Image (tube, rainbow, N blue to C red; front, side, top):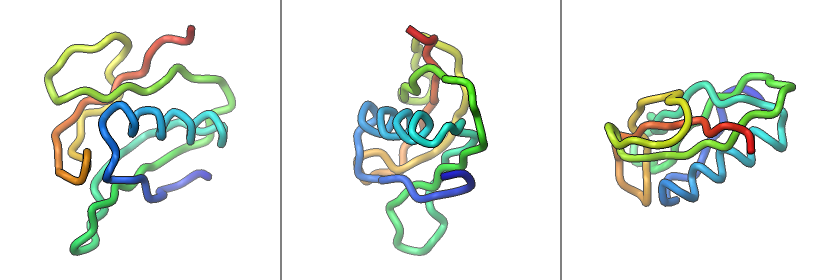
Length: 95
């Protein structure tokens, strides 16, 4: 699915990265934004995807400012394990 869709806010960084990667691969899409759901009382995230016919590497999520393999694609605030957290998203190279 393309556009902006809900993403779980109760997952760990590792699990959310896996979730976003799966959504990309299943839908031939590329993540372009991840934000907290602005609805009052919500603990969900909102993920925005665009069409991407080429295969992309996996997404990994780390605490903001932490280093990771790959290329940094986003810095944002998202719900991680139900708590608003400042994070960086990285795109890992294709294996």
